[in-house]
Image (tube, rainbow, N blue to C red):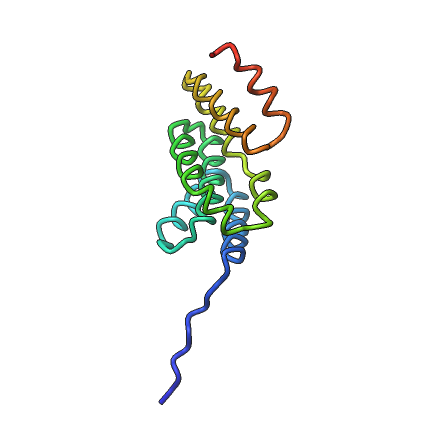
Length: 148
């Protein structure tokens, strides 16, 4: 009898690298192509690790922002925040670098500002400061301080 081959099991970091590579290739054709790739990936892989989903939502938010789909950015932001803890667990020591490479919080501030939700934009600045994402977040928060 022939021995049945085992399915290939990739680590979270390998799945993440595949996602980034596929997104980079799709993004060469514009935000619509990037969006199509990300939607297919997220729909087609129900077993996509939650830590990778956080990065997928980040990339999705960037594509939605390029298309000025502010409600789509907000939805991607919610998905990112829901999977942020899983991203930290999955990436371990690589979490800080991956988090600093994300743009979803900035796109969220942009989307909320475009929609007139300045309190929500201010809340995202506070969240970014709590995550220690850099001094520029202090400046963003200060520029929105009037919304308090």
